[in-house]
Image (cartoon, rainbow, N blue to C red; front, side, top):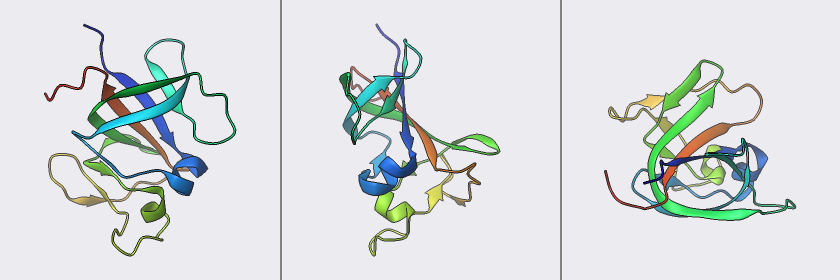
Length: 121
């Protein structure tokens, strides 16, 4: 059985119109290959979409200056930018739910790990 795949999301495309994502959600992403194997980059605007990947989200990570941080949910782009009155856009540590701060090296960057077979683990 194939392993889960990693989808890189973030930057201006997520901030523009990216949806909130939580572990356990089933999502579909339009992507381009980032490494030719199991790593992809989400594309939303003005890019050649090479394929879509659909599956259950099994892990989420913020990619900050200090490294990869496991998070409970990825807020919508609107919430991350402070433009959502129903969501403050804060990040929460995986397993503890405690709010965390991530220092970015430029734009926001996240990894969404998707199991294409969609089974809960």
